[in-house]
Length: 143
Image 1 (cartoon, rainbow, N blue to C red):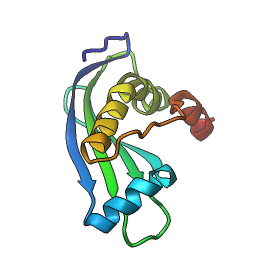
Image 2 (image 1 turned 180 degrees about the vertical axis):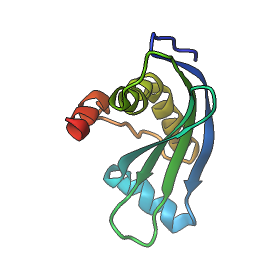
Image 3 (image 1 turned 60 degrees about the vertical axis):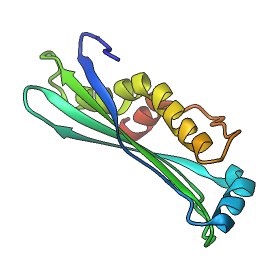
Image 4 (image 1 turned 90 degrees about the horizontal axis):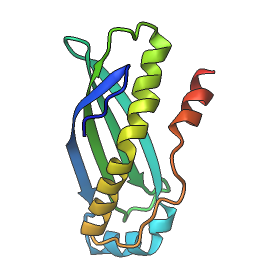
């Protein structure tokens, strides 16, 4: 997936880490009947590399935030290697690329990876009804 804009280019993406934890049958049965209580959390971190490259790690966690003992946990860490073009100089512009633009590009594939993980873990029929609006989240955080 090589996305080209005048400000950045996604050179490569890969699944850095993937986890599906269902410790026992009771946890599986609880999760199967309570999967609608599970919530999706997103965390984005970045690390500068050499030559205007940035590693962006987008983590999706799908979990039950209540405190039952018997539950499952799902997480995908998706890494993107992005080259920033020379005309990007302002910090806010760089933040928008990392937290918004790249996320809009990669999220559909990342969501599909998480859904496949859930299905392959025995939890079919899960849908993420609300679409993540990275533009709105960015504006709320930085404006």
